[in-house]
Image (tube, rainbow, N blue to C red; front, side):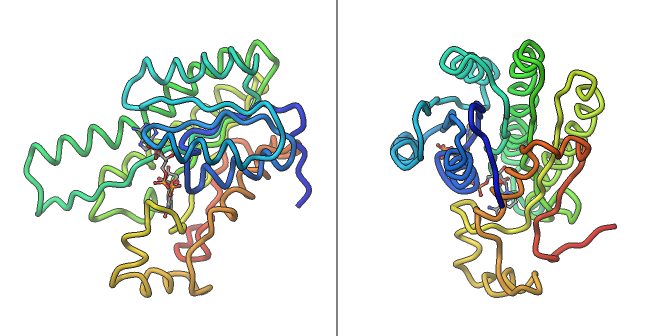
Length: 254
Ligand SMILES: NC(=O)c1ccc[n+]([C@@H]2O[C@H](COP(=O)([O-])OP(=O)(O)OC[C@H]3O[C@@H](n4cnc5c(N)ncnc54)[C@H](OP(=O)(O)O)[C@@H]3O)[C@@H](O)[C@H]2O)c1
């Protein structure tokens, strides 16, 4: 696929590893300036920075449980780049909290933390970035959701709800922002080979998980990155509000 992100400024949350890292690599290979965001893993973010093609990339730290940090993340990116053309809300957590196995306190903590990072984080960052997108004439927002939003997450209900909320928010924003030349998309992966899923893929359930897809494997982060890049490219505007499944036919909906 031929992409061209020359002169584009891209903020990718959670790009210290996994899907975010693969996405940063792909955008940089095709000319973008990338704001690499991390929370705790500064060393990995520095490795990503060293690895990226091209010049002008930056590294920004922010804990997305903190709404002021989310605002500082956008402001710092704007200070360095002057604009954000493409925002990719990718940072997220998956924490299991089966209802029969946790205390009420644990249940509340995990609900709050998950919604705060997976749903409120993207809502706050989008709010801050949109102001600048409007000033610069438009932009694109791509939110990384999950198959779990549709399929149900019996061991991680907060995760499923956070991603369903992200889908609904994206659709509402797509309607609100299209007149402002801002387009909003969702990518909903099934299992992807990253740190987030490693303990499951390497554990006793690994083989069964791989065979959820008729391809007999899970996705590589690069496969998610290519879908994101397609949506971020010129010509995909009319897909706004769309939720693109990238799950190897492991969960089909019509
Ligand atoms: N892997 C899968 O099977 C899968 C499937 C469907 C959807 N997804 C979605 O894809 C996205 C990326 O997942 P991944 O598998 O690439 O995950 P990952 O490898 O675990 O990376 C998660 C990223 O999110 C950042 N992050 C975590 N907590 C944060 C916080 N409090 N504030 C700011 N950033 C925070 C991490 O930063 P630091 O490491 O620097 O702290 C890291 O860069 C997530 O939204 C996830 O829900 C993943």
